[in-house]
Amino acid sequence: MNKNISIVGVPMDLGADRRGVDMGPSAIRYAGVVARLEQMGFNIEDKGDIPVNRPHRYMETENHKYLDEVVEANAQLATVVSQIMQEGRFPLILGGDHSIALGTIAGVAQKVRDLGVIWFDAHGDLNTGETSPSGNIHGMPLAASLGYGHERLVQIGGYAPKIKPENVVIIGARSLDEGERELIKRIGIKVFTMHEVDKLGMARVMDEAIAHVSKQTQGVHLSLDLDGLDPHDAPGVGTPVIGGISYREGHLAMEMLADADILCSAEFVEVNPILDERNHTAQVAVALMSSAFGDKLL
Image 1 (cartoon, rainbow, N blue to C red):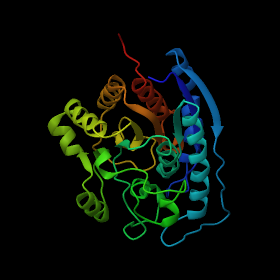
Image 2: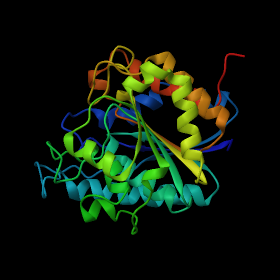
Image 3: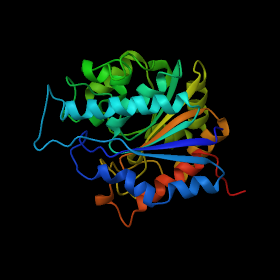
Image 4: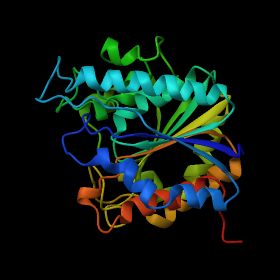
């Protein structure tokens, strides 16, 4: 595993309806992510935060709220992530709402051909402007990374598509819009809903997911939305949905990813301190990160 990690925060909440996730990077840092990873023997470089322009009034373009600001911040993020990859370091991105995956994936995929993606999330994030019931861009980044949606989102980083549907696995889904279900079926994305997690168990789900994303890829990006966990274990998230992955199941999944040693980048998003209880969800995020990077009891 790459021992050199570069952390980047993206204080973005414009992709979501609820304010507060812009404080997620600060909450995760306050929860001790740097000290935790350094104790594990990693060389940590904290590059600070990507600047996010905050307009004075609400803006919407073709059912895409705050399109200009989301594109601008993600274009900057893509450049920074690409530079981190060029330096041979592991980019660890702290969100912010899930729209920041647009920039993370754009930057990683510039350096890793045939990138695999494991998407831990209660939602599919596969909407476009035509299918989104809200116009919130945090529900669109996976679709745009696959080449579907508004041209400005699809072309972040100057190329498209970034990833192929056969190299993507969604884990923990339990809230999908109609347009997302249609796209999943049409292009053949592998999805483990909570039904499969309950029926098969997380160990088998992860075995199958790791095999799937490792088949024809040169590296795998982990995109983990804290709302993939049940709100009982992660209450401070942007869009909570009951009936999610348990704290222990989340750790097992991260531990199995560490054992597989396939990750080349990761992002942890949607921590909302305003909705949290004593920074508990940020602490959960740090604990999951440590498991993803190989921390074990024995």
